[in-house]
Image 1: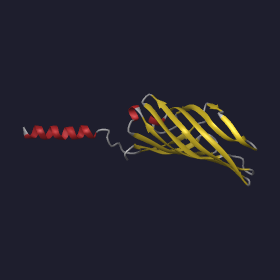
Image 2: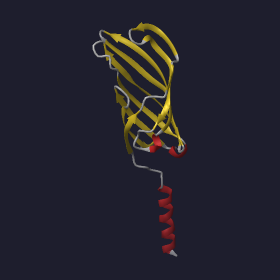
Image 3: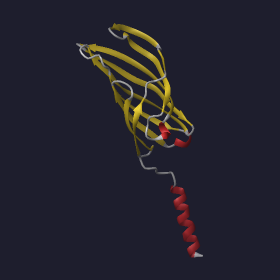
Length: 167
């Protein structure tokens, strides 16, 4: 009887611990060009090469499939505000992603991000560097996806981590 109680107690401890403390998982891969861009509202001063200096609610949509963990691949929507500032020959765009969602069969990731895009009059290639934090729902409830995106031309490089929210 004591042995049976011990087996039951150990089993309950093991069952209670399942899924509760998932180890962090590194994510790498590529972020592809969005399939759709919706302009949003524009205002501010005119900046050569981009037009007006302030964007509000600019939307980027598309399927993402280039990441090493399928839990963060799926249909993505990225809503951002941007403000561009010219200082000498350098232009910097400050980007605030007010809503980022990734949806797939397992659930949805929702969050925000921020970063910059920069270029100079001598080198017109835009250098992008952005950081995001998304929280999971559905099968991903209790998980957080923190990632960094950088690049010049698509695809951009992605490095990040899926981890427990409490971790």
